[in-house]
Length: 382
Image 1 (cartoon, rainbow, N blue to C red):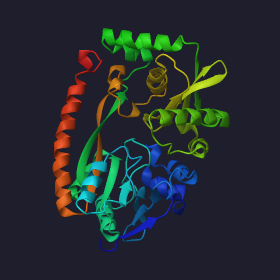
Image 2: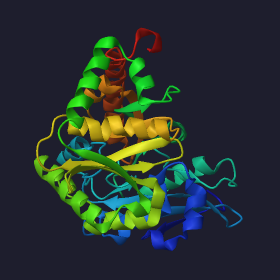
Image 3: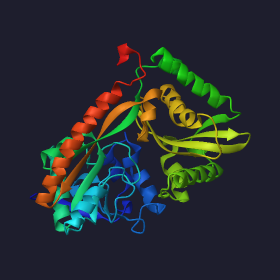
Image 4: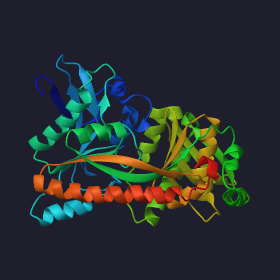
């Protein structure tokens, strides 16, 4: 890459918000300076937790900032949601060292979005140069691999054209087909599915709970205290790790303001459940949720149906409700493919991973097609 220069940075403090966000754009809150710096300042992301920031900046031949990407050296594969532990075991069984690896991602966040963040005035070849630069970093640091996860289709195409291995995943997203009200959405469903959704909402709203939607400065420290308890309860039930610290959520409100939406259920004055969402330009992103007690259909009401209502009321095109969950299909969320791209340094191991991904890709495409047939929408919308 003659005359281009690459730099690695050990934290978001190396960039001003304007520098970073001019490259990241305004559409996706997760790649914003505010979100990524909140992760670092709260110590949710640190060397201690196995996420060592090594953010990449690419400078054009004239010295101007052309692109950035959020990048981390990882000594494990936790908190990524694109699973490569099997690759790690195979590589190490053959005598290699899989870790550390380079992860180009938003930590703990399976939300698709751009990862190669190119300045709007950068030269047209910038994304291609950045794809090659990431490979160069991998070789110079003697890393086994680099992984760009939950990237856009465009990012995946650019990387694939430079020798990276593309990988497909699947999530479930709700799409706003011009609905003006929640009843308009219900009318698009088949009669049987519509009755199920109405019953679930009726039962959830007949359980003696009250619901409210809070944004930005309306979310108090007490609300975050309650939410953090719910978050930990969910982690405990799933035998997982609480990656996010309590201070992260306060920083999120402070830095992202009205883009933070907390949907809360209360029993009397006491909060018993909450769902955290972030708002993009045209998408509502559901992130974390939790509750105390047992309430009928509360998860569906708080995380899915109220998210749809919010999206319709605010003219948003999509709701992305996170990873996994075929049960979302019956509630209007349809299968959507997600994209990642992977660079494996060792040629023979790269060939083995490529063969695996080819088979996996075919299986996922077939599964998505089969699941689409379970759509609850009337035939004319399928």
